[in-house]
Length: 91
Image (cartoon, rainbow, N blue to C red; front, side, top):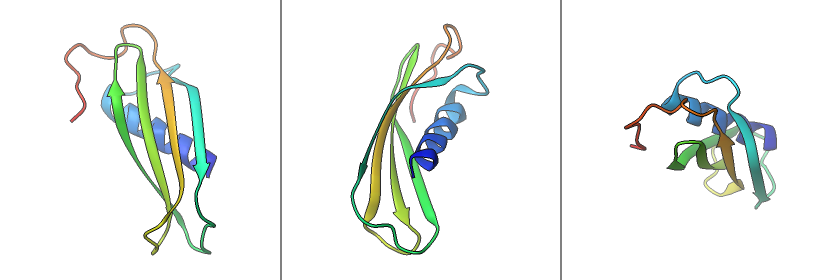
């Protein structure tokens, strides 16, 4: 679940800032909320803040077909200086 959540964060961050080399996880925290059902795990991520050097995100992980989340993660990605275009905003 941790790998899924981190990969989701990476995809969400790069969907806004583009393909940036050396964008790395600098902080990651996960809370395991419920036992995962025997089904595929689905992750949904969103950006909480997009700054000049840091991207703060959260991810909710669900078992496919079940409404209760099995995990909630938050994380921060660091991006190299100048990688985020001026005027890029969270939509």
